Amino acid sequence: MRSRPHFNQKLFLSGFAAVSVLSLAACVQAGPPAGRGMPEEAREQIHTLFDNHTKFQRKVTKTEDGYVAVTESDDKKLVKALQTHVAQMSKRLESGLMVRRWDPAFEEYVNHYDEMEHQFEKTDKGVRMTVKGRTEEAAKIARNHASVISAFLAHGWEEHDKTHATVAK
Image 1 (cartoon, rainbow, N blue to C red):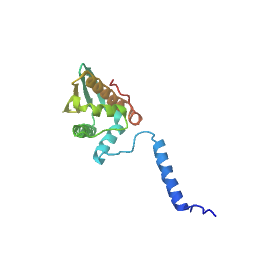
Image 2: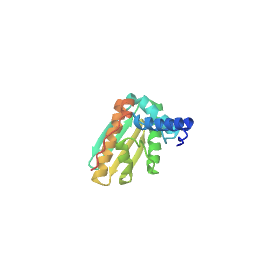
Image 3: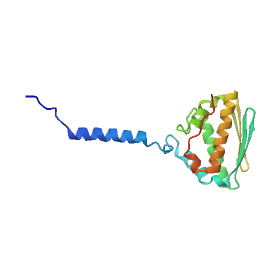
Image 4: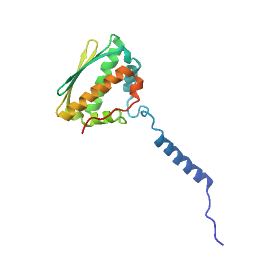
């Protein structure tokens, strides 16, 4: 007489639950991951900027090798939040850390960051960022980044949840 393999219901159900959760997580990647890897202080600054995106003025001048962007507000608290945010992101990028890993345009920007010169200056009402690409491709990526940031200020959270196209060859 052949013995039947022992069926362990608890083991089966726990394995089924684990596979179900992993499958669901893989399928439900709607929008950005919730704040992974970003320090709380940095996340707070970003949220403040998105919450108040209509209170900023931004002028981008595209140059042959990159761009110059001036972003300002009449609200002193928002000026401080913007200046803090740009300093935080500059430090993060200079140390080789990723930003918005799930967004192709940001991944491209981070991957080419060392091919660009970044000059960040505080103004009385915000910041002036001058970015120059050392190659034609890096300049194109820099200008794309400026466009994405302008879209953030124009559309706020609606734009935050989108991914953005790359421009490199």
